Length: 393
Image 1: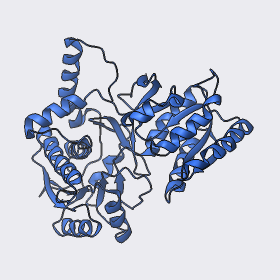
Image 2: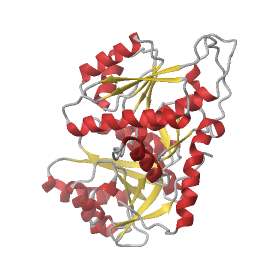
Image 3: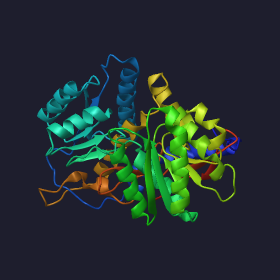
Image 4: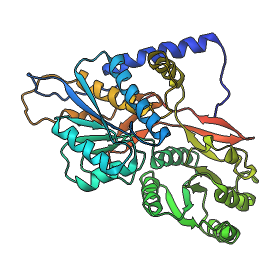
């Protein structure tokens, strides 16, 4: 989904210059890692890519190939010969992923980029709860936990955090969560609730809708009553865009900002920009959602096409960002007397890293915090309310 952009060659040249400077910044400006390590014999960082290249699912296989190529593009852009990258095929299957993980360890890789699939990452976490090797998973599942597992994907919790902060800055402090009945939805709601509390907001209530669309009307009346009783300011839809969400939003329309100036604000967490039916839904006009920072996307894609001759998968930048961030760490490390220093501690650098879709950093929960743009849906089109920041404060 595209938004109205300012035209003109000056703006295009400006962003081209900025993109070309990304590599310079990646090489140390934004990530001022002060820790050092001792490794006089071999300064290489051995990286294992765990990707579904051989999957029988053509879309998944294409994604795996695109992630692999993006990783090597990042290495090329960094001009870093000390990053040694090897690819291990998970085939998109849990048990194959375990075999790939074991082989990567046997071959003395120091860090793993991938898997992409949440199920494969979860299987590794379950079977190796005390793993000693850091894993930069490309999954977007924030419920995955592990001793050294980092989640690099754009999680629903990260999108919620961006929206919650924006709402709080606009004097909306009381939040209700509404989502589908799913096995892990309680965990998701709990994580989002924690973000609300961390931002000093209030969770007024949580409600779930079933697959039975005929029950939506009764549920909507119940939700309306709770909204009034609890003085709720914001309703957050946690589920994926579908007919049930649209139907429920339509039932609530008479008390939302869609109908009245000081009504309830609706916020969505799951890539509404990719759903034509959601964008065109009258009841969801004036709703808020998030989109990644798009300023460098086209330059990355053009560079990728020139190198490999095909259009990269939209999520291929995850592998690029992972390898680029490791290149930053390597660039900023020098010899140290401490033999036990973990060279990957720099992943927690509070200044973060510049990615293709904007800046990101890892917090203590090892889930990527990403700066996103805040979007309002107006007449079926996304209107930017707040541009993603270019630096963490």
